[in-house]
Length: 137
Length: 137
DNA sequence: GGTGAAAACTAGTCGGC
DNA sequence: GCCGACTAGTTTTCACC
Image (cartoon, each protein chain N blue to C red):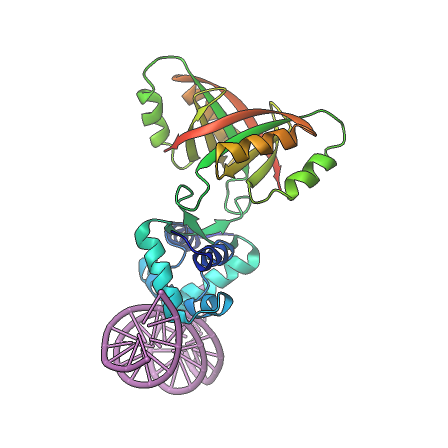
């Protein structure tokens, strides 16, 4: 399905998502057009879901990075899930998990005050366990 | 520091990291050049760390998504951290956390067999708790 | 699935506001 | 700090192998 050249292309796009097709072609020993065709195919197949920018969240006003493990009280998760939907500004990812808890949320907050408010709000629906990110490697 | 237009630019770049400066300018009511200048400034300030591609990991050969909470046995974390460095193919992110455990690792594996092997290997250095991602919203 | 060349578009560099 | 115009580079679209 994905040959070696496709994998090389994806590696380069992970490292630099805005590289020109011409330069990308040089790196994988193809012409710009051939590269653009392969990238287009990867997009159509859904291997490439999109492109995005990597931000320094310290500088964009969301310095507090937290992982919140969710323990649901009731059998119906929908009220909680609907609530989380409305908080997409804070909830970067919400993963349904096996293991301890039902969900693991990757969250960003402007301050501990905002985090505190969020925790109070979700506590209406669920119990939680909080892990604050100190650093990343 | 970041004005409203900068924030709009970042939003658009998060949604599409490969948008042309001209189209981006149209969205934020600026010319292409003015937009390019602002983006360049954001890059120089370090607000923008880079650009990348979003991949469907089911299709790239890493379907198993796991969060592994690490409990260190010894006071010296370095042997573990050095080992994790060599496994960057599997370890997407390694977060130092407060709360339960010392580290939280966001990992990707080609199969449960690879995950099993990885867990056996890190168990030489640390204890762990495993959460497998079932779905993402 | 790949190349090469022309047309259309985009980005970088000016001076001017 | 932004605009308009010019030049250089990139992408797109062909016909072709």
